[in-house]
Length: 375
Image (cartoon, rainbow, N blue to C red; front, side, top):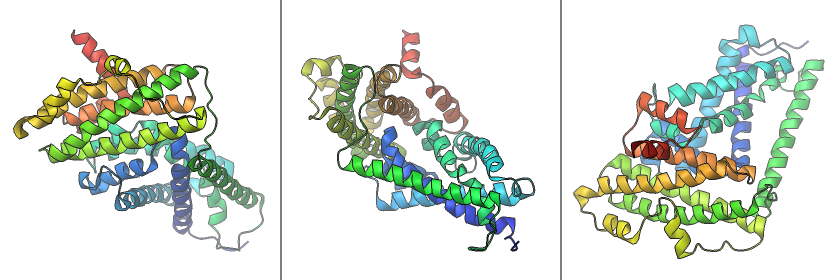
């Protein structure tokens, strides 16, 4: 049998492969879960590069920065798993590696979401409050499923023996390529207007939700652009830019899904529908924020945008608990978490308090429940 690399060298090779696979899968699968990949990469970039990297439209620098940071983190976790812990993991068989790697993905994603990002060493609350934990878990799992390749990668290229374990690892690599090919095909068809068909049991409910949330987002984008332009607090300005990017990305997904699923343009909401929509601001409220004096703008923005967000949270919560297409419900779950988190961010929640708020936000509409409890 040819000599094997050291565990550290093999772990580095595996880290490059698994992190790249995770990046590609995340990019290709994002839209199927109602995520704008560019916005998500920008949010990740804000962890090391801070709020200044956040734009109303994700820049290439923000996207590349987010991908690079993600790959560095995934690469580092692979080094820990097979290098630092190689005494226990390096000699495992492929399926045994997978059995350990999936719980490892739970541990690593939880470590980042609960501790490393919002607390020490990065002290960045945006990631945890804006993205529900399951997004990070899926990303880490997509990396961990490539860990069985270690059995093959521990040997120099083209010299690996033809043992049953190495053959399993080679077949695993072929499976990974096949997954990328399938996701790439689905993504390519999506860009051409051919999404996977609508799958739900409440077509009218999904249509109402998409129309209403799209209109709600359009007003939210208008408000957020005001905040990005006029807010005095730099953190609030950055958050407003993130709101613009997130909601514009979500509206693009709504439009793409609607066109493909229902084969028609999305009808506009009536004046009555807008007036009955939770959190949709009146003309008087829009005038109030438009005419707010500079020293009063930030407080007015936080108050009215919090009201607007609370309405979106209520709408998203209804969709999540409904009987619509699962992709739309998953997207609604993320919106519910995101907009509750942005209310917290507008109110300067950070550190351990950010984690304490983010956890229950994954499970319920706490904003409107809290408001109801104070009445």
